[in-house]
Amino acid sequence: MKLRKQLYLFSFLLCLGSISASAQKSKDRVKEMIENLSKDELIKHLTIIAGDEMEGRKTGEAGQKMAANYLRNFYKKLEIEALPGTDNYFQKVPSEAMKRMFSPKLNDSENVVAYIKGSEKPDEYIVISAHYDHVGVTNGEIYNGADDNGTGTTALLEMARMLQIAYKNGNKPKRSIVFLHCTGEEYGLHGSRYFVNSKIIPLENIVADLNVDMIGRRDFVYEKNKKDYIYLVGSDKLSTELHDISEAMNKKYTNLTLDYTYNAEKHPEMIYYRSDHYNFAKFNIPVIFYYSGEHADYHKPTDTVDKIDFDQMLKRTQLIFVTAWELANRNERIKLKQ
Image (cartoon, rainbow, N blue to C red):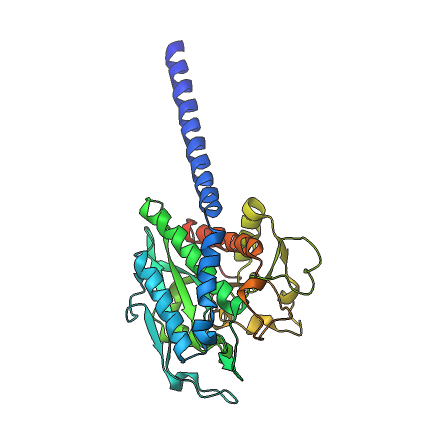
C-alpha cells in the first residue's frame, strides 16, 4: 500500500513538472518570437517603402501602386495567403467610394490584405491595420512619409514574417490574423471604411483591430528624455478586457511607458477619430491605436527614413505583436463592455 502511494505521488509530481515545463516552453516561445523581430528587416523595408521611387505614395497614383505591388510580393514570397474575397491580395477601392467634400478627386486604389488562418477558430479574426498611402509630391518635393505611415506599414510586414515562421513551425494562432494595409487614409480614412462596409469579413467575427500609425519617432514631449514609450488610444473605449490584456502584455514582455494622453474624451487633437481604427470602432469592434506622437516633420518632405528611431520602433512593434498573439490565442474572445 505504501509503495502504491509513493508511485502515485511520483506520478503526480511528474505530471506537475510536465505541465510546468509546457507552460514555460509556451512562455519562452513568445519571448523568442519577439526577440527575433528584426530591426534590420524594419530598416530594409522602410527604406524601400519610403524611398523616392515611391513618390510619396499618394492614393491612386503610380507610387502608391508601386507600394501596393511591393506589399503583395512580400506576402506572396512568404506564402502568406491573400484574404478570401480579394483579387490576389488587392481589394479595389473605387474612386466613387472616396468622394468627400473638400477632398481632391482620387483615382481608383486598393487595400492590400493578407491573412494567416487560425487553427481552432478560423472564423474569428484579429485585424492588424496600417495605412500605406501618404500625400505624394508637391511643388517638386517628395513627401516620403517615412513615419507617416511607412513605420506602421513596415511593422505589419515584420510581424507577418515572424507569425509565418511560427505557423510553419507548428505554432499556429488559434484565431485568424489579418494584415490590412489601407489606402486613402490621408484623404478621409477611405480604405478602412470601404473594408468594413464591404463586409469581406462578417463584422461580428472581428474580435479586435490593432491599428498602427506613426510609431517611429519621439514626439515633442518625449524627445528630451530616454523613456521607451507609446501612446495608446481607444483600448478601454469598448472593452475593458482589451485594455487589461494590453497592460498585462506590456508588463510581462516590453515594459514601455503606456501614455494615454490622447485617449482623453475631450483631448483637442481628437486622435481617436483620425485614423483607420475608428471605422472599426463605429461598428462596436474593440480597437487599440498605437502612435508615437507628432513631430516637426509631420506632413513635410523632411519625414524621411534617416529620422526614424528604429530601436524605439522595434520595441513598439514587439508590444503590438504580443498583444495580437494573446488576443489570437485566448480560449474566449474578449468581451465588450456591458
